[in-house]
Image (tube, rainbow, N blue to C red; front, side, top):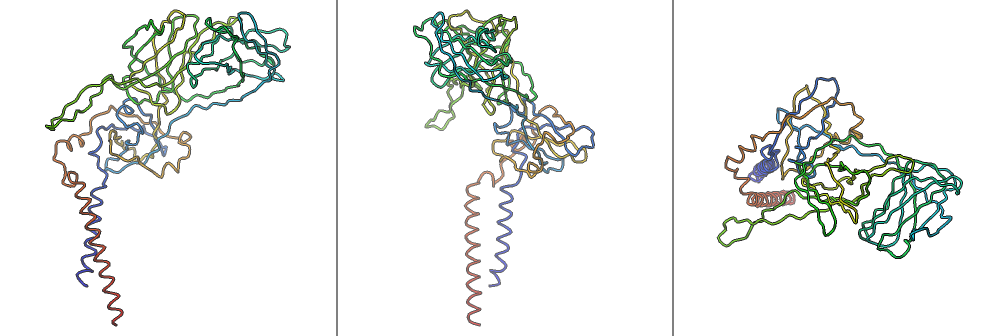
Length: 446
């Protein structure tokens, strides 16, 4: 009985020590580090924006980022990303007239009931695999119409890839007349299924512009497409849009953007002699986004253009970008350059004694951190925070030392350690159960 009473606490202490050894916070698991320089300020919090090299070294979920004090303790932080704010009001005007114009064009007149401000319409037409020209006019008396857009286009590449949105100059015309022309190869009048109008207002988050280096340009004569391949220099960047600089004065083109992080990938080959062998395989292009670009001058002499291709939030963007421009029956446009805009994450943390914390990044095994500070700061962008900035990224010497030193016994034999822990737990449980039975037996006898 006495031996059991002594042995049980000893086993608990031993088991607790082994668990702490396994789950201890170990900076040797992080490959890179950077000093965070904090400006002198009386503010309670500090903040800095992630740089492209951090995205390149971190995991895709950014869950391996840590802020650490000089004494080795973690500094809680909040990671947040600004967002664009879009207000969108939709109108569904009534169709008061359908007719066929010259060149088998479908014409639809819309009545909004009153003068309403709008700057965009969506034109849904029947069929697949087409590019149809669209003209939009406005009027307040349904008699005299004024041209809003002379040459816009709607596209359909497949059933699920349709581009029907047309930007308009902001206007408050009560009536709109939409004319859709068939392609040269179409014999029937296009069918206009529906036209919707929108008033769109945007408040855009701050962006950082990144240059894209051109590494290849080719012309595909079979599909009459221009192909440009660029290098962003970094992987996993939170790119929000790609902007093209085009020399041509007037054009309307359909664009496909795809990406990949490498041209070749090494794949391990299984062999009977256990020697490591690899072979290289081509890496395919992954589609990122499709869209349209255009530039034209309206009848009133006003210039209109869209050279920006928006990328939805949380869409993965790769290091190498392939831009394919479909020219259809027109001559190729000339792309002078391309650039990417990214909306970077911001880290907010509580300042302590103006000390410079260390940022660690680059760990495949680290769990994403969970801090109470996230509940405290509901809107981190409204928090007054002193400016901080990152120094150059450097290799973590602790990680290098860990690679040079022999791995600890507990690291090399994790499975065996787990088995031992289970056995210890079972033995401990047996002793506790036996002690409990002995106590019950003594109570019955007494």
